[in-house]
Amino acid sequence: MRIATWNVNGLRARMDFVAHWLKNRAPDVVGLQELKLSDEAFPHDELEALGYHAVVHGQKAWNGVAVLSREPAEAQTRGLPGREDDGARLLHARVAGLHFATVYCPNGKTLDHPDFQMKLAWFEALRDHLTGVDRDSAFVIGGDFNIVPAALDCWQGEAADGSIFCTDEERTRYRSLIDLGLTDLFRHLRPDEQKFSWWDYRGGSFYRGMGLRIDMLLGTAAVASRVRNVEIDREYRKKKDGLTASDHAPVFADLD
Image 1: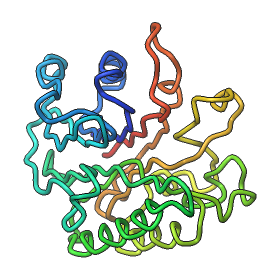
Image 2: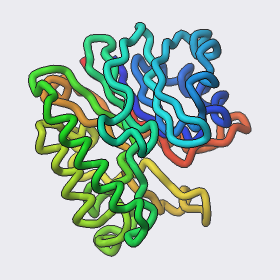
Image 3: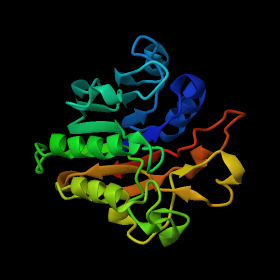
């Protein structure tokens, strides 16, 4: 089984690119983030033609998350309880023997912006929400966490410590999710490897290696024990057949 996460940075603008990836990588379950469209505008017909069902928690022009799957999925939770005013950022579905959640976590903008405190509070609410997860179950939460877990995950290394995405406040909240019994599937197989999942469009950041690893798949032990491969799909941060990529690369994991 192949599971994946991808911030597509606007599904309407990226639909042909997403279709290209789905055909070539053939994932079984995918969490998408930053759809930037409403439920009514979601391209169900186009995805069904590619062999995918979808459950959606959309929002016009901003945010929005979806789960695509080969088998029909059953939505469990749409929106982070108590933080609905922060946008359509969480969707939890039951599919293919998994509990699978996709999240588009707040960016925070800058350390002195009000959104930074909102980001911290949102992560605290996410931790509280996930406290009830059965640690013996097959549970995955994937998405754009907008946090760099460690210096290894930033092109600047320790020089970025204390800046947005790399503060102690953010990393502490990320670790609080891990402490619930979740494993970063990429780090599980690649403990010392430096790879990134996001690069700014500006300044040639992608080709200069100026990236961050902020897109993760986290799983319970029941999932981590099944992982045989994890990839940050850097090839799909490049243009394909004249189609413009998202500023995020997909991340996928293959499970036994």
